[in-house]
Image 1: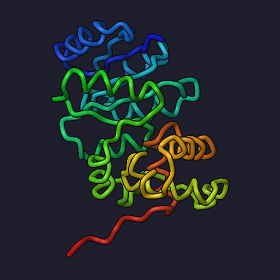
Image 2: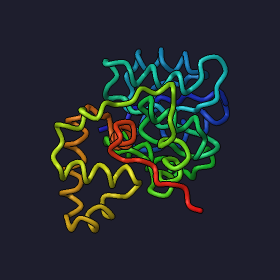
Image 3: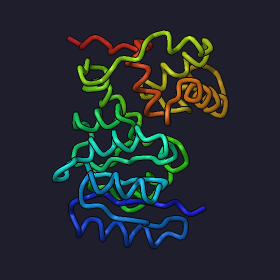
Image 4: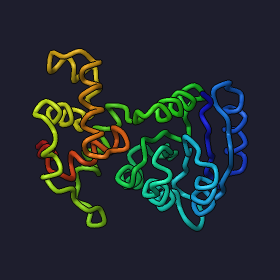
Length: 226
C-alpha cells in the first residue's frame, strides 16, 4: 500500500528535497505541499494523507496550531503528524505531542531515517526513541501545563493491572523489548497490551499513551537528583 504524504514547511528548497526523496520510494507518494499551518490543515482535509510531515515554525498559523487542528478533526483520525524540528527537546515539540503528534525528527535527519520515520508513524507506531522520550518527559511532558487539560484518573479504570504496568513503563521511555525484559513477557505480548491500552483510552498511538500516563497521574516525574 502506498503511503500518502503531505509536506508542510515554509522552506521551498527543503520541501523540494523531501519530495524528491519520498517520491523516489515505491511505497510513498507526496500528495500535496503546504507553506504554512493554515494551508497544511486545508490540504490535509482535502487529501486525507496518511502522514503529514510538519515543521513547527512557519509564518501565520504555525505547525503547533495546525497539528492540534488536524488531530482534533474526527474525519482525519487516520492521519498521523510527524513533527520536524531543529531541536529535539524543544518545548513546542512536547506541546505538539500533547496535541496529538505521533513523533518528531530533527531537520538534520538522514534520508533513511526520514523514510523509516514516515513508515513507522504510518504503521500506527509513534516515533519516540527511548533516549529522546526520557529527555522530553523529564523536561516538558511531566511539567504542569496550564493549557493542557489533565486526564481524570478514572480514565484508567478500564485498564487491567498488566496494561497499566506496561503503560507506565512505556511512559518512562522504555521500548517494547525493554518492557518485555522487565516483566518477563514476549515483545509481542507487550505490543498487544500497549495496543489494548490505546484502544481503551482512545489514544491515537503510543505517543498519546505516554501523554495520558502523565496527565492522569499514572506516572509522575522522578524527583530531581542532587
